[in-house]
Length: 119
Image 1 (spheres, rainbow, N blue to C red):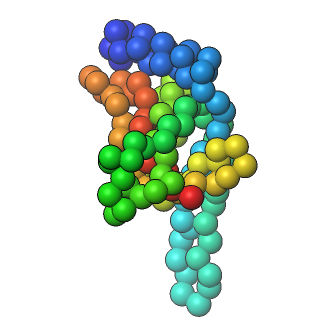
Image 2: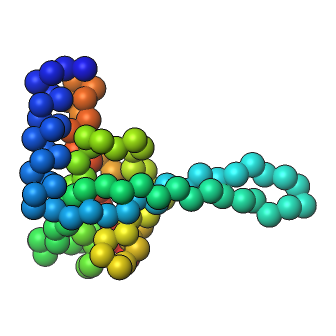
Image 3: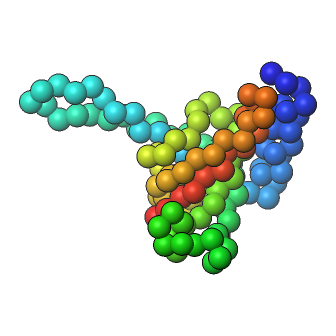
């Protein structure tokens, strides 16, 4: 692990902790398929820290980015899982679907995750 980027990760976590909020990342893992039986899935909740931003009107195209979509920046430090599309994120009392994930990980060290979420 690169010590410069691990320091950046710690700084991002501290700043998001000071100015952001706690959220719940729900990881959904599909179970195995058995013919004639329902496919089960397992949900695991993880507490994460981040900040929520509205997209500026100029980038809302109605397809890739829709009205109401939010940009969320999550601190990578301390996370035991990575967010994926298809996971959900509880912000306040509202569950949001993660529709895009962009990890910021220079030199292989995760600093933050930039998410696009939709209700």
